[in-house]
Length: 306
Image (tube, rainbow, N blue to C red; front, side, top):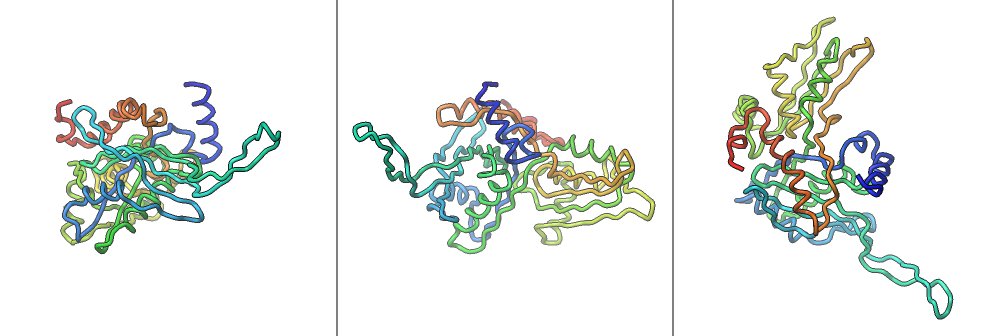
C-alpha cells in the first residue's frame, strides 16, 4: 500500500468510524419493484445513464461515466455517484500585478463514489467517500434517485449491504443466551439461494414483499438458532443483502450483548476506480462477487464456467 493509500484509509477511519476500519469496497444487494415496467433492469440502467442533475442543499448530484464492462463472461455496469458544486471560486496568483485574484469555477467536483453493478444478480460493489458519500448515504441516494426518476407510477427500491455470514454467526455463537431475534426480509430478486427457498416461497404465497418476525426466548431460556432452523436461514438470507437480522442477549462475560448483520458488512480492499484502471479494479472485486453469489449452494453460479 502506498503512502497515499495509507493516508486515505486513515482519513476514512476518522470520518466514518467503525465501518471505515475495514477495507474500502462495500457490497450490496438491491431489489427494484416497478409494476408498470416490463424490464426493471433496463429501467435502472436508463436511470443511471439519463438521470437529470439532482439539486440537493445547494449541491448537484448524479450518475456519470456509466458504461458496460465484461469480466470472465459476466457483464457489469460501471459508473460514479457524484457530488459537485455548481459554482465556486478559485484563487490564483496574478504574477504581473503580484496579487491574489479570485476566479469563478463552474461544476467543481466535491466527491464521487465508483460502483460496479452486476445486473443479472442485482448485486453491486461501491467505494464510499468518507462522510460526503458514506455507505448509508450512497444507499439512500441510489434509492432516492431511482425511485424519483420514474414518470410511469410507483417505483420502489430496496438497498441493503451484504454481510459476512461467518462473522455474524461467529458473533451469535459467542452469546451465552439469545433473548430476542428480530428479522426483516424482502424477497430476493432475481437471486434464489436454495438455503432460503422455503422462506421465499412462504412469503410469496401470501402475496407479500416484505416479512418481519420477532422471536422471544422463554423466561430464563435461550433461543435455539441452530444450523438448519428457520431462524438460522433467515439470518443467512438477511446477510445476503435481503434484510436485517438483530439479536439481543447475554455475552460471554455475562453482560448485555447485541449483534446485527449491519455490523459485519462484506468488504474488499481494492484501489479507487479511475477511468483508466477500472478494469483492473474489477478483476480484484470479481472474486468477491463470485464468493457472495456462490453462498448457500447456488449451483447456477458455482457451475458457471469461467
